[in-house]
Image 1: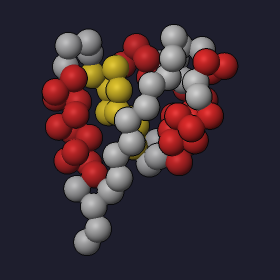
Image 2 (image 1 turned 45 degrees about the vertical axis):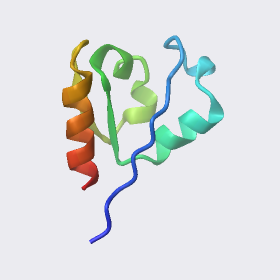
Image 3 (image 1 turned 30 degrees about the horizontal axis):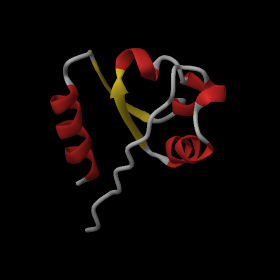
Image 4 (image 1 turned 90 degrees about the vertical axis):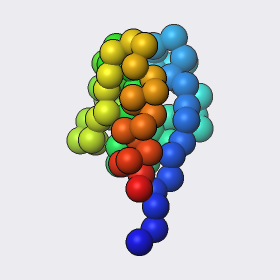
Length: 72
């Protein structure tokens, strides 16, 4: 079984117009999106229908571990 791919992208200051085209494409093509809950809420159009791993601030390690488990 092949493992999944993890892409790490920034969404800018929270406006869809500020997301780079490459980051937007990565999010659009993802099956699972992991991120800080508040920032995920900034991009509902991009994450609709996807599995979301959202955690609170200061839970970056937990969120990364969950993303790795999902990719496996």
